[in-house]
Image (tube, rainbow, N blue to C red; front, side, top):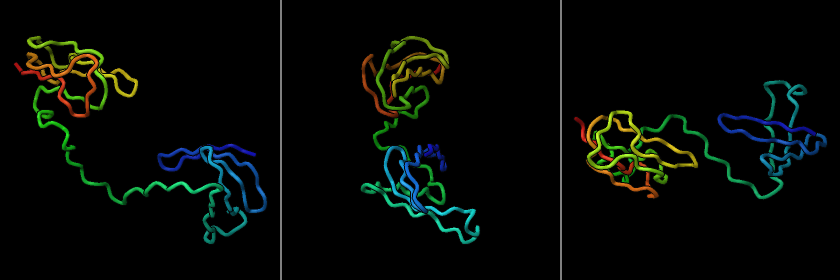
Length: 159
């Protein structure tokens, strides 16, 4: 009968109306069947409009929690994140992934912005760059290593 894409906040739903009988309809929402009761707003006064009643045709799916009324305060760094990840000159993994290539070795001189490591994460190649110029003091990973968020990969001494 009709297909629609509904966006509510940051969530998008694919809705297909399969059948309508009176004030009831059978719909698919993201491929899951539901029986819904609806009321035309044109037929009822705007202030008296009742929300639609939704009954799942199959076992109900848990609803996602409502967003908080106020934003949460910033979270502390996870405990598994090494303390050295915040030291100047440390190049850390911004996300979990696999090391595709290490482009520097101990003793190399680099400039701020030089790519020092290539990280594959979520099927994308990411160039990780030196935040400061200086000499490479440590290389803590090798090609093929799996790394965690915040793990220090390379340490550069400024100067």
